[in-house]
Image 1 (cartoon, helix red, strand yellow):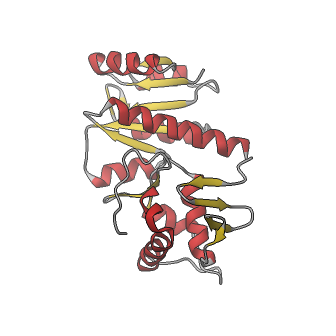
Image 2: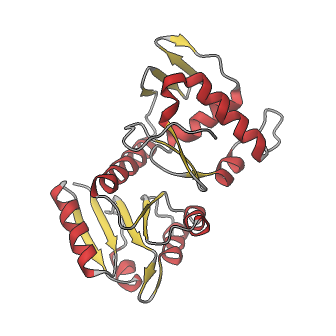
Length: 234
């Protein structure tokens, strides 16, 4: 059973969220402030749901502490603040995703499941291929197939796809992608080049381009379940 730490000081919201999670089979431990969250932080946790504004601190600092201590479990922010800068700040500090209040239970559960699944795949380090729509991506072989036929892609496009699928369900900011991608000569790519790579990759994915979701003002998410995906341009 997956164990989730819910850090939320709004009692009614915390109780409702806890009930929804337990109904899906999750074990939930709840903290109403940063102090209690620190006490409950351990290796048994599969994921942390973290409110931004807390009575004795904020979620950003706690997330930073979690990553500084080496904990790898996914962190999803629960935030009523929709400003782009705040969302990006959380992602840059090591969070994996965010859900804006008031959130829909189905969306929250989808985000949780996707992040736990992605983390388990990365931890196991055993993923040989990713299948989505008509496509199969073989990261070790650096090949993309559609209906069994090779899709001709540049190495940069395949590196971009690899970053996205290996962080399935996680929002990757443009800055994060720019830091992780580099041209074949070893130089970092710029913002305009990233937009070109994204457009070309989506063009080559055709009807499966919607698996790459644009989170406006924040970055991109690979959403294999397609529950909230809208086809958008980079």
